[in-house]
Image (cartoon, rainbow, N blue to C red; front, side, top):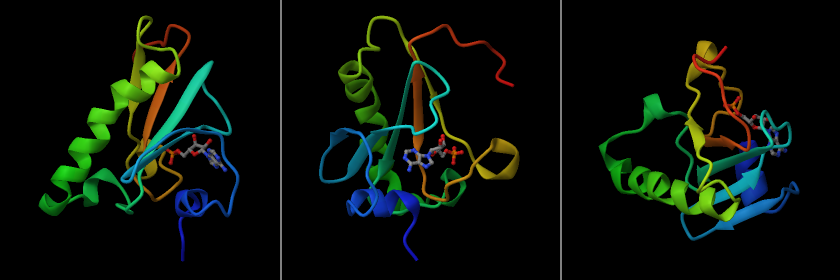
Length: 113
Ligand code: AMP
């Protein structure tokens, strides 16, 4: 069965796409937790960071290297942003397809709730 993000990659579900290349896609979160809230994920499914393996090191490197480019594209370069990856139930993961949250546009409290 396809994950929600695979359906978005396949254009079966609409999304506001902010960046795409052959390996990753970035979209606006449907339920933003900050003025700017973008999800960046690999097109290849890794369910969560805890399940990534050595074979994924190039893809994970690519994903992380794209964060700054995507953040710049949505206007967060100067003000800064937070990068979040939720893993498992206590982490708040709801979509089992690894994704980075890029949050910004306001000052974010620490520690998170
Ligand atoms: P997580 O809880 O870390 O697994 O993050 C999943 C994120 O996906 C949440 O922030 C949701 O608001 C977001 N989300 C769920 N459905 C959609 C959708 N159709 N388009 C964009 N974002 C979505």
